[in-house]
Amino acid sequence: MKYRIIRIIKLTYLPIWLIHLLYALDPSVYDECDTFEACLDKLYLIEKIINHTTVLFNRTMKPINKFKKIVRTRDCLSVIGPSNQVNVIFKIEHYD
Image (cartoon, rainbow, N blue to C red):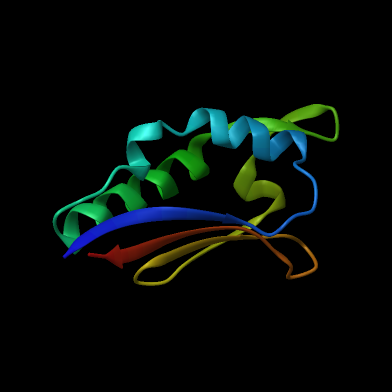
């Protein structure tokens, strides 16, 4: 069984902070993995990048975790806005 990380964007438009975040992520994090643990390592890498990336928000550069909440479960990473609206989901998906 193969695994990969998929990105689900729940916004109708892409704000500038999200564009900065997506450019900060290496495209290889979306490549397929042979094991679940390898994909989990990539999910941890995405979480680390999210926590250490500064993006443009309200005309100033701020870390994402200052204005968004990051929630991680075993196979999913969610970026949640101040009104508890899910903005972006990074999720491990298995396929054959």
